[in-house]
Amino acid sequence: MTTIYLVRHGQASFGKSNYDELSKNGEAQAQLLGQYFKNIFTEQPYIISGSMKRHQQTTQISLKECFPQASYEVDGLWNEFNHQQVFSLYEPRFAKPELLKQDVFKEVDPRAYLAQIFDEAIARWTNEAFHHEYDESWPTFKTRVEAALKNLCIELTNNPAQEAVVFTSGGVISVIIGKLLELSVQRTFALSWSIANTSVTTLKLVNGEPLLLSVNEHQFIKSKNPALLTWL
Image (cartoon, rainbow, N blue to C red; front, side, top):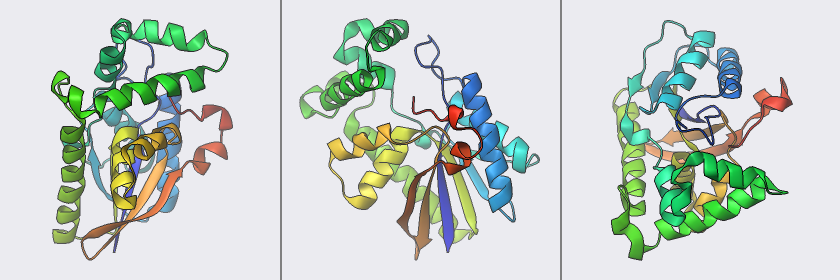
């Protein structure tokens, strides 16, 4: 049986014009992740990464700590949905990320305020009436993520490995958990707020089918440096 480790990327650059780049915190988180993997893996796992910069930065930094000579596959099916477009079509001024950040951090409870905006923006994105307005609609994103998981399961069934690691994003991981637990859209995206940066969600592949083992493991960060824990 193969264990699949789904890794959310390290903290990206929220509120900057280019979100798709790790912050200094994100780089430090990726280092701790690599050290954790060095302790738990006895041999190199099968490794795959989304094609976004934050995915590959997390992959490269963590691998430097545990398997510095390792190669990995790149597959854009594991990429996150375009959250900046989802925000901007909900509120046009949020097309400028710095304005979203400005609004969020002037609130007494920034996380709660951002969660409210996120919920409302996601509700619009997943509403059938608006699907045509997005470059990638909710049904298209969901189908893409499910295809990524199916392809991985086929690959691991045909070419067995003890472990596989996928570097991806919180939205992707939430959709996979939602599919396996048959969650509603609302409950699926509620998971996004609990998935910490560089946290690990594990699946067990049994007879070619994925089963959920654990969600959002991040004790390896909390035990080393709790100040590095982030969810944005």
